[in-house]
Length: 206
Image (tube, rainbow, N blue to C red; front, side, top):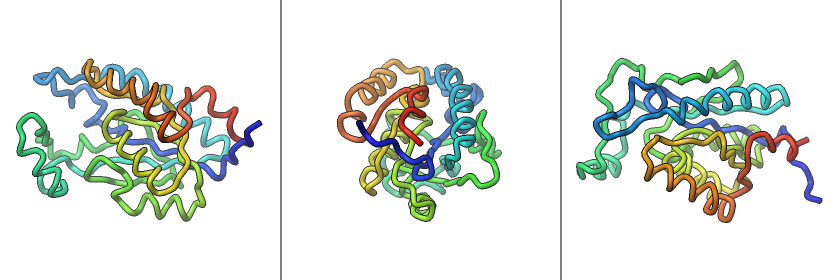
């Protein structure tokens, strides 16, 4: 029987649950991009965060800089020279970067990134090392984008992973849903770590 994981050796990373990736006012409807599935997922994510905190777990929230040329790295700006890839935010109000439906509490970590992988900000790894975290729990959006990139970053840093597949979502675009399904069904469990529903998580920890 596999040994259970100590909750104090884990950390929950909640990726990009912010208005730009969740709120109906930030949907890009001329591209057919909507976030209905994401918004349906957020209440369950909130419930898990509460239960995880109650069990003694530590939470780190990841958000983004404004998604504009001034903040993004050179390679992303160069990628966006291709009109098919290009996406910049035109909202300078600060609204897109605010958390959507989740609320960091005192003691939670907040890490801001300007590209896909949250580990490109060294603050994330520093927090985890300070906490002596060995196993990272992953939730958030977009599954086939920043979530997948951060999973790869975490694995490359030597962390074990628990990936909460029911608390990871992407846009309603069918191609992106298909790609995310492949990651959940094959790539993540085979190449990166335990991939399971959140209801099964607490059976793994002590």
